[in-house]
Length: 194
Image 1 (tube, one colour):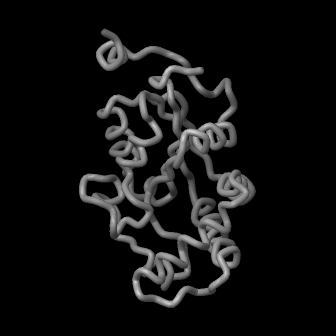
Image 2 (cartoon, rainbow, N blue to C red; image 1 turned 90 degrees about the horizontal axis):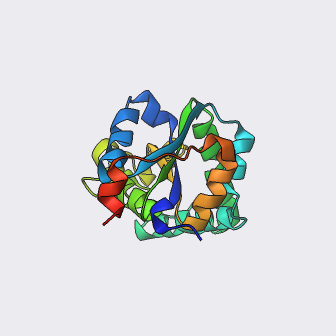
Image 3 (cartoon, helix red, strand yellow; image 1 turned 45 degrees about the vertical axis):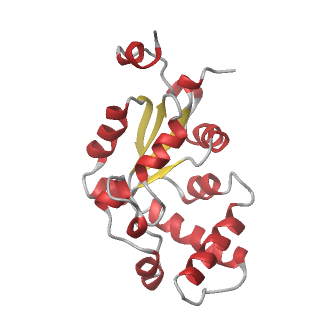
């Protein structure tokens, strides 16, 4: 079993993050907290790559639909449909259109509690309700209402793995083993050694 200091997570800077020239700011935040960048590439993903990314978990479409329905109800809105798979399929379609609209930067970050730290740093999925100090809270004004009224995916700059298992599966989907570099940073001695 790997030591926790070698936990890895996938981060994808989405097309809006690239178009808004926020790549350096996003990378800077992860470096400043002590995470180590071990893989990175820029590409325009295919629709197939995006769909397989989101459906690595076979329950994703249903869960995304349930989340969308619950969010609508919580805001006093009428959901587009009462059928989670139907709503999730629409969400997936919007995400495919969004993520294939331009280049993305896929990265693997490594360090203790990498998954949880990165998730905390990016903020909630909806930028409007993300805390100030998070990437989404500081740099995005989008909301579920705005995205739904516009018939598009929410613009939230970054994707990050939601669990350690999800990170392992997503990293395998986006990177070959030989694309992930093992090396040592001087700061690792400060962070992890006695």
